[in-house]
Amino acid sequence: MKAADLVAHILKREGTEFLACYPRNAIIEAGAKIGIRPILCRQERVGVGIADGYTRVSYAIGQTNGSQPVNGVFAAQAGPGIENAFPGIAQAFAENVPILILPGGAGLSRQNQHPTFSAVDVFRPITKIAARAHSVQELPDLLRQAYHAMRSGRGGPALIEIPVEVWGQEYQGDIDWQRIAPVKLAPDREAIKQAAEMLLAAENPLLWAGQGILYAGATANLVELAELLPAGVMTTNPGKSAFPENHPLALGASTRSRPRALAEKMRQADLVLAIGSSLTKTPFGPGVPADKSIIHATNEPSDINKDYRAALGIVGDATLVIEALIKELKNKAGDERAGRRQELEGEISEINKSWRADWQDHLSSNEEPINQYRIIGELMSAVDPAETIITHDSGSPREQLLPFWQASQPGGYMGWGKSTQLGYGLGLNIGAKLAAPEKLCINIMGDSAIGMTGMDLETAARYGIGILTIVFNNGIMAAERDVLIKADEKYGAMTVGGNYTLVAEGLGVATRRVEHPGDFFAALEEAQKVTATDKPFLIECMVKEGHDFSRDDVAGL
Image (tube, rainbow, N blue to C red; front, side, top):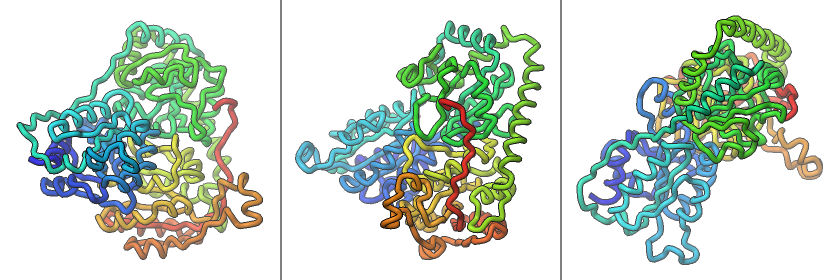
């Protein structure tokens, strides 16, 4: 068995059903022989995004329904192929997404010779493991190490480079491969006891949930903890959908924009319990105000006390941490907490009513060009969030969608943004649909974003992947209004143009252009019918610049 066949058989045993890729890479043909479907992208960074989206949804849904999650895989050509993949891998690294990258490599005799590109050296800073196979006999060990790295502790990409002469080598021996199980850390008992005492002593505790909840399958546990304390629950951008937002204790998620209830309850909080989150400071995520005491529970010790001083640090798997806390709290909590829960739920409900009333003019606006919130409002009323997976793109679509979309199921919303590459949402959406073909999968992107990756709409058309892409086209880089003043006045630097309906048609994608707000609902109905037949659809919405965001001010948030 040659190297490519060996790798393909190991992928198959790990549950791999498709391979995001771009030739040449021998794994593509070897995988196809044994039923691994190749999805050839138009651009390598999108191929990585496809593997990323598949992984996120596979983990979120799999951990919830008891099935084994599968890591997405991307295979690239040596040299230019893996070079082009850098942006996607950097994005996945920033988001801690456990995907497997399998590039070809230059011959061993050419390593360290200028200008040979070494994927191992270049990608080591943005992967959990980056290694080169010097012979076919090393591959099982290297792949075992890669899967262990991806599935244990904080997630992230793993890369195994296979040089050209290794592909042709024959493997000697039997393939004794067993699926690599994650290694989970249990929390320190004394730390759990201390955390329970701090939570019970707090007047206004707040739960901060990151994407670690989704990877650990801890949503049900988190709901039980919130109801027991009781405490309102906010999520980070990548953690959105980790707590059901139709629950009366849900505060919503935060980037720079957020629901008012989240801002108000953070303002009132005296103790923040962060679980499954790195608490990394980022321009596109929430912060912890300076006057809050923090309990930080994470599976990565180096995150604790990194950006915020923790009153208490707990290292452990999110599910195991929450289970231990619940057990400890049940031994100590009194009956008076039931009354406090009803009171807290009422407070959150009233804040939400006031906030939505203040935004109703936007959500039902008849403006032309169209108000983006009108589109979001129509979407929320027309689709079932429980049967939908939605993501955004970088910039204004993220800030507009996140506060208002109500995610009710784990994995129903794919939030991202520690790195904010325009166009990344398209690959995520294709990957999500491959992981959950029964779901309506939606990506909302701006005109700048589609300019970066829009050619891969053809990938969805070619492979019968029924995604829905909604483009907010305002013909301008609206988010740069405050930094491109003279450049725009003198040279029109902010203007971006295009008719993306015509582009989509040229790529074999069914499409509708919406210029009047009252026409969106009919376009959405048509789109749902088309995507149900495994064909992609694009709705181009002619929208205004849009500088209104839900940003109730709380210092440090």
